[in-house]
Length: 191
Image 1 (spheres, helix red, strand yellow):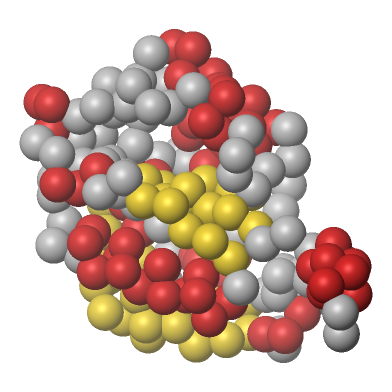
Image 2: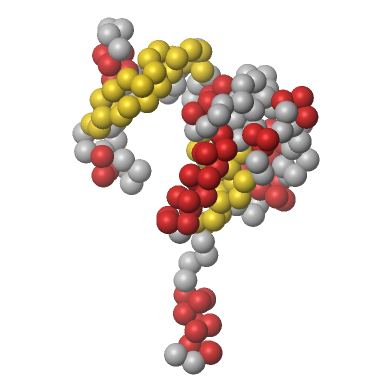
């Protein structure tokens, strides 16, 4: 393949997706934040996407710096992953940029304590689907029901799948009341 052929092949390859991963801790600095950044970077390498981190977990809660977080900066990413907690010191414009990013069709992943973020910004809680209230069980085995087995994100799971995790009780509904919630109620005997 000549130089021209290589440039045609390169042009035919889809651009790698880019993920921004935030690990800022406004309340509690989990020891898993650093290892989580490393794990997601490795997932990106094996999964074919690029991961950018800013090592937010290394900053002290009273000195969190989000000066980089602008609509222009976010525009360089296809997705945002947050393993954050607390009322992070973002301006209203930065919080709006986060929601606009997702409303504009970009991806969002809230990991572990993300539902414990921005209690002072209800629009974030609505986007995530609920705010953390307390842990129900830690390291419990739950069998989760797949509500939409035809969705691309769940079709490989079958009708249900076991998961060992720390299960949360949310202070607000984790999904629309019109959707079945008995899968969690039955799991923890709340029916």
